[in-house]
Length: 403
Figure 1: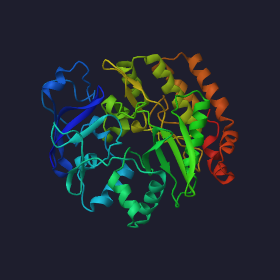
Figure 2: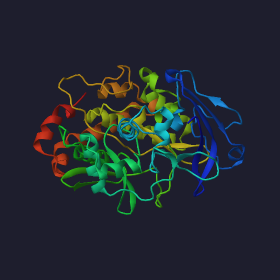
Figure 3: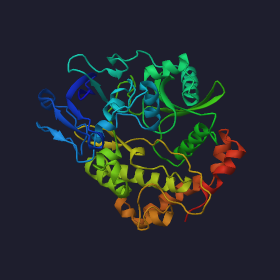
């Protein structure tokens, strides 16, 4: 498997946009991509990787040490999805195969197929195969997730694996139909130290109280397991895909550049690509302050994203993947640099370079005060949605005021 056609969902249908060639050479693997001539002639053509895949009639190769272009990598799985695919194939899986083996609910609006004529398919045990037509029920997903963790070979695990993982991330998840819309469901595990889905639900409710752009969310119990549900913001009302890329892609950075990851890189991307940069910059700063306040130290480049607007513009996506970290010290650091004190999780550090976010210091201080005023009442909100006292106690250190 070294050649695949890339599709993008535009104008209510799947359009072949180019040819991806993958050269599997171990740690020296690399890719080449070339847009199709017909795609380049389209008025509504979109770059599938604004930093690395400009809309030109030429073959483009990945940089040294990079296997797959970031904009394409965003359509693939992360830790949980790779775990499932490793179980399914029971052999070494290439970087390209990971991406091709995802079901129809991958992130964003890309898909893949063996030719430019027959539309998207997924890569399975016996080669290319059509997508499974229906989404799984929450009950099948809950049982399938637990069976996957326990290495139990059951029918529900088979259904779960056959459908294919959807989005990236470390936690068990699946896309389901909920209230007539596409939602991402995140599941609890019997081995969890705390009720992860309920804590994430409570944290996102708190973020919404702070005025952040939070998708519609929900929480349910299924087969005595907690399930957190968040509406897919990369799907329209009819369930059709909307282009999405991570901040890692739009900034042009790569996984190996993690020491260079910063909120300032995202700020620069917003200034370059956003149709409303001042609004997106203010939202990003507010998220930074919230991450500091709840000690969400998983705020890396893949946990910030962009949704396609129009005319080559990308807007900051709604908030996702925000959970308080558990710590036992008084030293707080986030995942990325954002102030003169680097990654130090403090309000003073956030304010130190607020100008990068297009904010005057007094306006930035007002945002900090507004967020902190809500977060100080976190126990009330968490208890209100059912977080138990045991988990509240575990989280207390995370919510300490960080001046």
